[in-house]
Length: 117
Image (tube, rainbow, N blue to C red):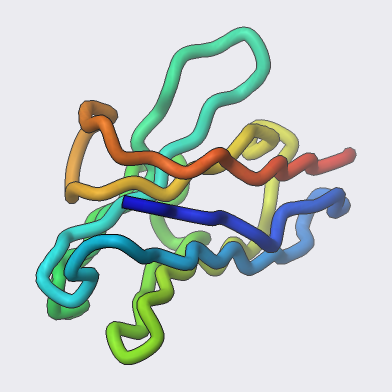
């Protein structure tokens, strides 16, 4: 399993970023996927999950209405569109296999998102 995140960066509060995750080494189109994040000095936090078919999604209350998870099974890509970013969203963002929670052994190396005030 290989998961490679990209798209992170520095953005001002209220701005937007789109994260991508390129997946390989497993059958992506039958695997639920999720985004996790870890803020400085804090534990790993589940952000959002999506079923394999892409029709069912879930979000943490902290990002609901601002973030949108999606996937392109033809390209083995997972996305996280992040709008109305807040300083509290500053974290390293990881894509991982699975739908809910922070458990699981397959996770990417992460991409840094920094939101400035």
